[in-house]
Length: 155
Image (cartoon, rainbow, N blue to C red):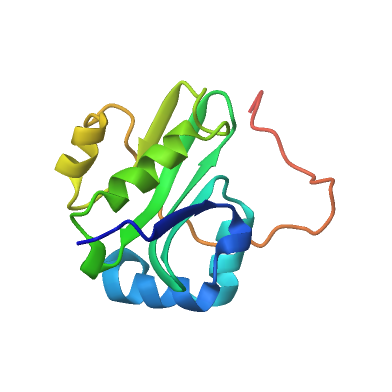
């Protein structure tokens, strides 16, 4: 595979939501059927965002969320099947790791179902000590800044 024409671009402004949806539907079982309006919200709350392009074809994507100092999480690393095995996934992750929003944090997390070996080659380790999940249901919260609450202290 000749990847000399592949360009990495950092920033949400380089994401085409229709092309991202198509890439997810083709190559990311965990992200199939994500809606464009929801993807837009995820992108608004992610930094950095890295895309890989071959001309006008989106062939790779990754994003992270971070507080910039303590913790970051890498999300949605995906490469078009025709480009897998060419080092593009590694470049996407390395670009995220070197970004100022991520490069100084104490710990960087990610979740993967089938790609543990890929991430181990980059330096990630299995971590059974802090992994928990809450399958959250949307809450109905008041639209005001002040929330009254009852306290359990002293009961």
